Image (cartoon, rainbow, N blue to C red):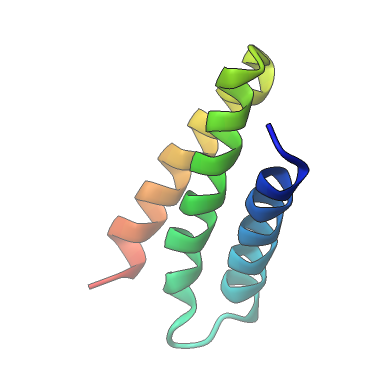
Length: 73
């Protein structure tokens, strides 16, 4: 995978985490941003056959989906 795709996944997850951490009325929108980052990193992990990283991203994706269901209308 390209370094740009890895950076995209990293930036999305960092941005989403920062949005949730500031805890404003719209902070729930950080969960879809983090989910996008998890999908990018999960794709990278599967392509590289990096199963521990893939498992981590699956769990992060599930947690982000729970966050979306609880925080967003």
